[in-house]
Each structure stands twice: as structure tokens, then as C-alpha cells.
Image (cartoon, rainbow, N blue to C red):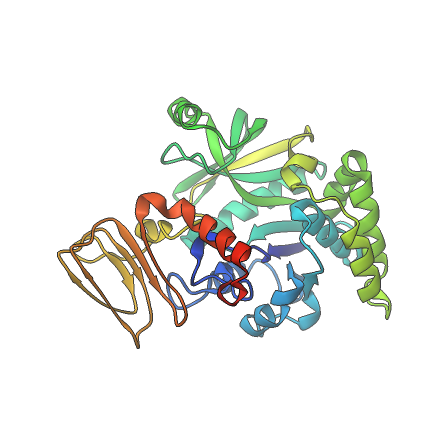
Length: 363
């Protein structure tokens, strides 16, 4: 049986001031009518039953997540008591799934990505699940063919081809994984792009819940022990106390460090769908609709001699730019951001400064 785990606890600080502590980017409708989280759930329609969907977020976001996903039972939206990275999140989800389904296959998805078209994405997941069914000890990740020398993504170095099959007009391919590579410097990233052997790590995984738990038990026995004790208490009156006590004791570590880089039986499916991790405001220039001057806008906007800008506002508030080029303007009721596109990574510094000054009302 197929299960899905959606990780929805990110802070999205590079999308300040629209993204806030209690309303981060995955809860925003940055592109289209649905939020990124709602899009992620909708993408699973026809593949995973609603009662086989598990959403993990942080405790403060649980009410907002449940409000956005009325079709998901409230008990299937779990709020982590503190931040402990993806190994703890995924390990806990796997332990809970295995309690319900000893041989269950789980798909792990971040909640803040844009993916299309739907059919190609779902066929890719079906292929990944087939690879797991063929070898239950195999774990599968989805790799994105890079389009530019990104320094902000981890990379996967592919090995020999493992399997290939047709899906409509597309031929899907899976490869043995040779090695995972950390976020590279610019010259290294250019070499990766030119070689054709490296793919962006999408953060989308497919495996049996039991398999990833066995891997955690081997490589990170402390994390495994904590998540098992939490899962054992699932459904009991004492669950909230056990959850908080055990989870807080976990040493935070990513699933890449904890398992993926150490496990030997890893396959990568080459993703044929369009993908964007929507990491910062600049992503809207890649995925949004632009006007004749290259401006991507939302809300009410008027531009004079303005080109290649990203404008995010409210229909009730007029934003006007005059003589602006390659800029980002984000208006919210209590804060406005104006920045060069080339400086968008510095938005994180703004959030840090707000914290240092104690201006928590803007976080």
C-alpha cells in the first residue's frame, strides 16, 4: 500500500515579509489559486488515499495547516514540538506508517515545490514505487536535471543505468547512485552541469517504511530509539507527553547525512517533469506569468519604465514603480520589502536583524 508523508515545517525566511513565523511560504498562494501545501496534496490525488496521508509540521503551524487541508483528518497532521531536521521527521513518519502497514511504501515530499505536469509526476512516482517493489531493500530518490550551475542545491552523481520503461511518450530511466554531493561552489557547480552526470537532489524519496527504519537503526540508533518510543505511544492518552519528551532529545540531522549518503542500495529516477523549489522571490520570475516588460506581478500594480521586476502585493493596495529594473517589491499590511534581485539571498539577514532587535511583531 502506498502512503505519503508531506514535510510542512519550513520557515521560508527568504520570502519575508509575506512569509512569517505563523504563516510561512508553504501556506502562501505564490503562484495560482492554491497554496504550495495544497498543491502538494492535490498532486497525490489518485495515487494516495487521504487516510494514508501524513503531514508533519511544527506545533505552532498545526491550526493553519489543518485549516488549509480540511479533507485530511486532524489526527494525521502532527506538530513537532521543536525543530530537529528531516531525519527525525521522516523517521517518525516511517515508524507511524509501519504500525499501520508493515510492508507499506512511503513517498516523502517537501510541501514547497512547484511541479508540472501532473501526469508526468505521477508516472515518475509509480516508476519509483515499482523499483521499491522489485527490491524492498532499495531506496529511491528523484533527481532533477540541472538547468544552471546552482550553488544552493545538493547534487546526486549518477552511476550505471538500472532500469528503463516507457510511460506514454516519455522513457523513464533509473540509475544507480554513485555519490551524493554537498552544495558546491560556483566553479564546481559549472563542472557538474557540463558533465551531464549530476542531478539536483529534489528531496523527494520513495522507500518502504521498514527499510528506512532499519537504516536509521543501523546508522543512527539514538534517533531510531526516540521515534520508536513515540510511535509506540501513538493513540494513547500519554502520547503528547511522550512525543515532546522523546522528540526534544533527538540530535537534529538531515536524512541525507543520516541515511542517504551511507546507504548502499540507492537508486535515482531521472525526473522528466518541470520542477522548482521556490526557494526565494526570484523563483517567481521563472514560474510566473510576465507582462510585456518582463515584470511578474500579483495584486494591483502600475509600472512606468520598469522592467524585469517582481511585484507581490494586495489587490486593495496599489504598488507603483518608476524607472525600476531587476527589483523585488513586496507589500504587506505591516512591512514592505524593496530589494535588487541580485541581493535576494540577503533577505535572510533582514530576518536575523529583526530577531536581534526584538521586533518580533514582524517575524
